[in-house]
Structures are given as structure tokens and as C-alpha cells.
Length: 405
Ligand code: CTP
Image 1: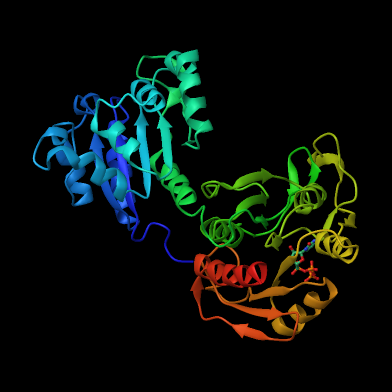
Image 2: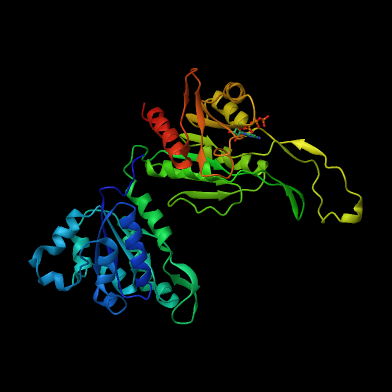
């Protein structure tokens, strides 16, 4: 998929909050991502930060209320509003949220919003009590009803000394959510894609488990690619610290049995399943309620097979249920294509992504992958060494073709 920020014009509204300094980081990140960033500061914002900071990171003029009546005359707000693909207000103060909700058009930011017809994304930042106040909540609700997106606030230490919800979420998270909002009109709009990622954990006792080396990176990259294509994405993942792609609905599981139940539930109304998770094939046959002590003489672990999730999904598809497209992954250390071909058939897949885990630059943990795509009809396509995101984008191009056919 192409970069969702490329060629997009984003108004970044900065309002009167100490989090305005984080707004400079966000402006920089949006600019680096490829967007044209028009920063508009309210009077309140000017108490915390100077427009020059934003001009330095966006390589463009940053606007203030002086521009309403100044150089470009009375149309600055119309030009700004009409050229915007997205308006992000981060930080969004209680006062600006109130003005946006009521249409109180007494500053450049609110005027530009009224003159625009693009999506609005708000990242509230204020004291916890102000955020919880019914007036603020009602204003946010009204804006959401009109289609505005909100992200946060996060909980933590507030400038007032209180601890609670009110902190602006981090710029990286806002960037990811802006990416989600910008891609909503993509080819997979209103399609539901379920992606699994990472390894499962099969418990032995309360402190030990069996797992594998899967990092989850390829699955998370697939979730991002599906978001970029406009899909509604459910990401079912084993425990890991990877950030959730903005807008993805993340469901965390531990065991293969939990993943089976969640995959069957989530794929019931889904259009595609991308099964990138490294699901355990075996689990300890017994779970010890208490920690197994060193002195216990424990030397043998009995294993029991887990259920093959893709086989269950295939059975449902045979019965006329389940997703239209199912993609599996085969991580092999020998006989790559032969093994992958067998799995493609045995699991009734539309496509299997085969990767040789013996290569140093492919497979587990690293950021690159070297894969061959095998299709149900017999076609094969070997991709060059690519980043996991590029591999995900290539797979998603195929999904788009199938779901739009
Ligand atoms: N898979 C699954 N349920 C399992 C195990 C694996 O749905 N219990 C899925 C994986 O998510 C992957 C595909 O099956 O998409 C192939 O997984 P892999 O581990 O390569 O194959 P297995 O069928 O487990 O065979 P083997 O381990 O013998 O290679």
C-alpha cells in the first residue's frame, strides 16, 4: 500500500495546555511521515510554545489568530480548512473542545474546522476533574456523534499534581491513529480482517510455560497493512510488547486453546483470516497448580497435542461459514516449498506464505523476511528480501484483489 500520509495536508491545532510541547514532536513526526503540516496555534497555546518551533520542524509557516486579520486577509481560515485532509487537535484543551462542539468561531482553528469537510481527530489534555466534568464529556460526545475521533487521554501524573486521566497520549500513538483515520476510505473499507500474531504460551505451572521464538513482527506488520488498506482489523496476539497499529482491535491470548476460541468467534463475520501466529502444536498434558519445586524430582514433561486452528476454520468454511480468504504461514527449516505445499492443501488455504527460518535475515525476531507465496491454484511467487512491512503490503495487495473480485 502507498504511504497514507503522502500528499496529505494535515492541520495540526495546538491549544493551551502544557502538552503543547509534545505537539511539536507530533508536528515533526507528521512532517517526516510525508504529510504537509499546517500548524494553527490558539492564543492559549502561545503561552506555552512559540510558532517558530513549529515552523522549524514543518518547514512551513505556523498560523496564529493574527493571520485571521493579517497578511492573507480574511480568507486564511477558508484556504486552510478547504485544503485539509485531516484536522488533528493535539493537545485539545477543554476550552477548544467546547468551542468546536458549539461552533464558537472566534479563533482561526475553529474557523478552519467550520470551513473544512475532513475528519477531525482530538487528543484531549487537561486536568482530570475538567476532563470528567459533565460539560466536557457532553461536548466530546456531541463531537463524536458528528463523526469526530478521539484518542486518550492517558492516565498519569497531571500538571496539577493529581494522578488520573488527563494526559495527552504520546505523539507516536497519535501518529498511528491519524494514519488509521486517513486510510478509512481505502479499498478494504468496511471489510473485517482478522490477523493472528506471535507465539502462544502453554503453562506448566504458575511460573513456567512452553513457548517459541516468534516475535509477532510479521503479524503486526500485516495488521498495519490491513489498516492502511482501510479494513477493520482485529489482531489476536500472544503476549508481546509491540505497539498496536493505530485503530486495530487488539485481543491478547496466552494459550493455543484461547487462540482457537477467539479466532472462531472473531472470524464468524470476517472477510479474511491471516494466520501468522506461531501456535504451539503441543501443550503440557497436566498443569501443576503450585510451583514445581526443584527437589520434587521432576524430570519428565508429558505433552498433549493442541487443536489445529486452521483445520477448524477449514471445517467451518466447508459448512459454508467463516471467512472468504484464509492465509496460512509456514516457517520451515528444511524442504521449505514441499512442506508448505502440503500445508496449503491439508489446511484448505487460499495462500500460504513460506519462509525459511534457517536464513539469518528472515523469519523469527529480525525485521526482514524472505518468503515464497504459494497459491491454491498451484501458482508460486518468490519475493526478494524485503522488510516485514513490505512483505505484509504485498500479501495485502493479494487480499484486496480477492475481496474486491
Ligand atoms: N496453525 C494452526 N493451529 C495450530 C498450529 C498451527 O492454525 N495448532 C497454523 C499456523 O498459524 C500457520 C500454519 O498453521 O499459519 C502452519 O503452521 P506450522 O507450525 O508451520 O505447521 P504445523 O501444521 O504446525 O506443522 P509442523 O509444526 O509439523 O511444521
